[in-house]
Image (cartoon, rainbow, N blue to C red; front, side):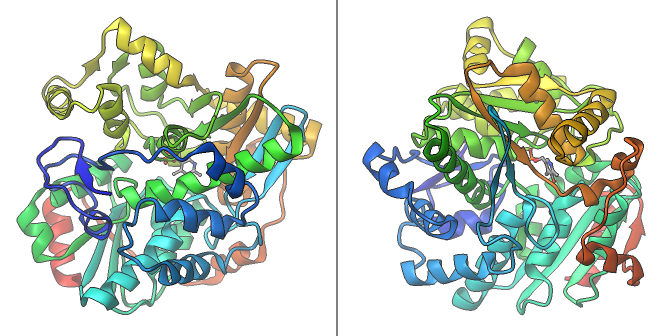
Amino acid sequence: MDFISTRGKVEKTGFIRTFLMGLGDDGGLMLPTDIPAVPQEVFKQWEQLSYRDLMLEIFSYFTNGEIPREELKQLIDESYSGFRSPEVTPVKQIHDSLYVLELFHGPTFAFKDIALQFMGNLYSYVSRKENEIINILGATSGDTGAAAIQGVRGKEGIRICILHPHQKVSKVQELQMTTVDDENVLNLSVHGNFDDCQRIIKELFADVEYKNKYHLRAINSINFVRILAQTVYYFYAYFQISRRTQAEKISFSVPTGNFGNIFSAYLAKRMGLPIHRLVLATNENNILERFVKEGVYRPGDFRVTHSPSMDIQIASNFERYLYYLLDQNQEKVTSLMQQFQSEGQIVIDPQLLKKVQSDFSAHGVKNEECLQIISKYSGEYDYLADPHTACGIAAYEACCDKDEVCVTLATAHPAKFNESIQLCDISQKFPAEIQALFDKPQHMTVVENSKQEVAEQLKRFF
Ligand SMILES: *Cc1c(COP(=O)(O)O)cnc(C)c1O
C-alpha cells in the first residue's frame, strides 16, 4: 500500500516514510491511496482477538511488510505492557443503551497514550534500524505532550520538544510534562493558547529545509500512524459489545478537538466496521459542530471550557475528512484550504452538507451542561466522568435514538481534571501515580508567542 497527501504534491511513499514525514511535504495530510476494505469473514476472526493481536492484524494491512510481523508484534507488546488494564481499553456498561470505552489506562491517564506509547517505540525502532536521528517537535493542549514525553523519555537517539500554552493546561497535565527530568526532554511554555502553539509548529514544519536540517518529526495527530493506532479500539469495542448484546445499531460518541480520534472512527467505518452513527461531541469551541449543522467551517471566539484538550478552533485533521468528502479530489482540497487561509472560512453547498450529516451527528456542549452531566452520572450511575468524557455523554443524550447502543469514549481519567470535578462538589481520591507528581520539581522554559523565539530555543536543544 502506498501513501499520498491530501494535496497531491507528495510522491507516493511507504509506511515508514509516511510515519517519518508526519505533515505532508506539500502542507497536506498523509493518507493511504486506498483504504483497505476488510471482508466480513475476517471480522468474524477478529472478534475473538485480544487488543494486541487485533492491532497486529489491522496494522498488517498498512505496513506493507516494511516491519516484519514478529518485530511489529514485539513493538505492540512493549507498547501496552505498561497499561494498568490487561484489556488495554476496557468497555464498561453504564445502562442498557450506554457503554463507556475507557481509554485512560496508560501512563498519563488519557487516550493519547494509546497511540503515543506505540509511536515512541516505533521511532526508537526506526532510529535503530535506519540510523536516523529523531527530533520530535509537537504542540499540546495538555494530553498529547504528556503522552509523547512518556513515550520517548530516556530513549536513545530521540529528543523531544513540546510546546504548551502557558497556564492553560490543567495542573496535573502540567506536572506530567514538566516533572520529567530526562535530558532528551524540553518543555516550552508559550504565552498564548493552543492554536498559537500549533501555528508555530505548523510553520516550522512547513519549512522543509528547516525540517530536514533538524530531522524534525511530528507526534501530533497530523501523523497518520497515530490515526491508525486509534482505529484499533473502535474495532475492539464494537466486537465486545456485539458479542455481549446482539445490538444491531452500535454508535460511538467521540469527544473531539483536532478531529483526530473521530477521524480514526471514520477510518474504521470505511474499512468496513458497521458503525451505525458517529457522534461528534465538542465543547463551546464548536467549529466542528457548526460545520456539521450549517456547512460553514469558520473559527469562532476562543472560549475557556472545562475540557481544555478540546479547546481548539482549527482542527488539524479536518482536511483528512475534507479529502473524502470531496471524493479524493486533491485539487479541490488544495483550493478549499487555500480559500480557508485567505478568507478564513470554508462554506460547502447543501448537497455536500447532506453527506456530512449522513457521516456525523454533532452536539456542542455548554460549560454548564458538562458539569450537570458529571453530577448526574456520578449520582445516578456511580460513574465519575472527566469533563471530556462528559461532553461525549451529553452528545449521546442529544443525538442518539432509543434503539441504538452507544459507546462513549472516556478520553481521560477524572483525576486529570480535578478542577472541574470539584466544581460539581465531588471529591475524588487520586491514583497514587498522580499524587506522587505534586512532590517533584518542574522543568520548563517560558517563551513569548513567537516562532523566532521557539526556533532559538530549538537551536540550543537539538
Ligand atoms: C486530545 C483529547 C481529546 C480530543 O481528541 P482529538 O483527537 O484532538 O479530537 C479529547 N479528550 C481528551 C482527554 C484529549 O486528551
